[in-house]
Image 1 (cartoon, rainbow, N blue to C red):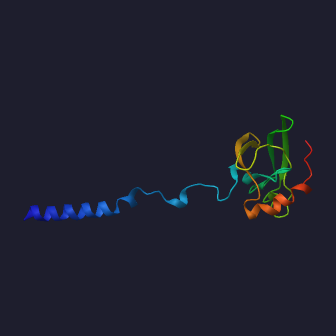
Image 2 (cartoon, rainbow, N blue to C red):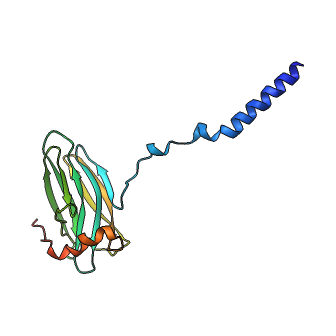
Image 3 (cartoon, rainbow, N blue to C red):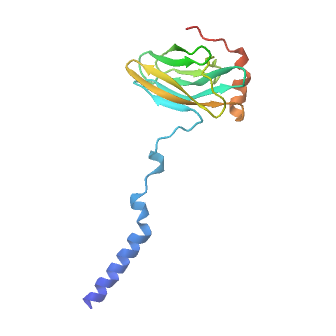
Length: 164
């Protein structure tokens, strides 16, 4: 009689573990970090770089994205890149005030006219730095295939080149 009870409990436990086992080891999808956009992102000391994309219409190109400062002090972001036409290293800096989100190419902000080379579908690399913290950022090169980027790309002819 004890063997039957033990067998019944063993079968029930096996059935329970066998049918619910995947929930014991399944990762929680909401805890997986990812960029919820087409561009690249990075977290520096305080500043956060969001949705950086390099947009081109075949004639002119520019870097678009957002820089967010959730801190209580103004911070400076430096973007370092190699100019594709001149093969020359260049830097551009932005000061972002506390609590500010600085948009490049979005929400009426002006995109940064730089020449990184590449054609749609390529990846170009820039370096973003804040103080001692720096990250090499692999940025996708996009065109107006996505309707969201069409107004930004259409405005690229109006973008003034940055002075370095």
